[in-house]
Image (cartoon, rainbow, N blue to C red; front, side, top):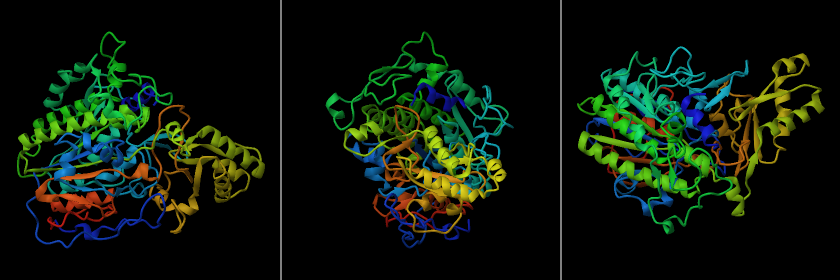
Length: 573
């Protein structure tokens, strides 16, 4: 495991523009995901202005749109409300793939390509031939600079089979800079593409580091930031609710039995490293499921802007900042919790400060900001059940055991299903061959059994995923999450309100349902995006060709999106 992923153990918890790219309208309309509008953007005339000096792309890991709008009345005037009150924002922005997880979402944002083209089907998966674990950004040829590199650490974009807006920009304009920063390796590496530079938080010591894929050693500004040990300022600092208790009446109180109680506990106020004598790996990892890791990430973003002189000349640069903490908080406590509610309010204040910094440093009329999320979140099943909803947990090992029992009855002794891989099942292909069977016949039998498991909505075979069926619910979404030769041959879809997990607490994401695929898509930069709410249904794959048009460059080659329907006052070239 990489250092950032290990934290979960502490919280169980110039020409060819968009007209050249293929549209992403879903091939099937389902109850879970509304159909793409398929409508082109408004007629385009002369450009509103020259390209911005700086594009600030931001992702809030695990932020559903329902949280942004649900707490709108408690937001500061210049954080999220900068987008909602004075920017252009899309209230019906969705992901169109089925397995909605962090790596997949981050791979889509600036490439416009679903996993069916990029091969980033999940955070990790198993090689279908060997059964070995593959982490989405692992590459054993490279190491973290100045830090231990554990097995499966995220070190390069080698597995990523798509290019990004930043890759195209740096190809056309080699002097442009593309910097990616995140609390997670995948949150930094994937948006940075192949030609950017990624920096990620190291939970061993609270520093930010890059890898030898990008450089031999850190620039002086990175060393200066790390040598100041800014993460230590939060040692024994208390995460305290921002508002009086009545303001949280719309969220679930702390200390619920389904909330993970580890790391910093599950009640506010929470003291960082409370039982420790000095900062160490447990403390640094424990910052991630708190507001302070996001504040630290934005501090490093400021250092990058100054150290790399981003936006300081007429050459457009791109800064990608993925803020990871909301995902950790939601996993541990649920998006319905007061802890998640309060974390969101802290984040809003951090964004306000960061935007005001950008106004002064880069100039209010010189940059644009785009903010989205890699996925949404489902409510904790136990909370949902207490509200009268059908919800629950599906134990992966028990699911495999049930399917294998049925396959044994039909085909004879053997461990036919060997393991989960992302959201799919792998099979013992040698066993299938030794019995003189066809793999597709075994997959079809396993599909029938899987769909008998309580909490499983559907299972799709390799033949279905490679086919052309446009009517079966959820198949189109799962097809976009399936990359032949990488993804497992039988893909599972949990029932709405259910999660595939052996953990007794916390919650997750990874389904084709609205709570997981309906996310914010917020933009600000009046000269380029205009102002107002856009209610037309759009997809996050539409962002990459839109940014490409703003920058006057071709859209990424694998992009499946089309330009966003920006407010009528703005026309792009």
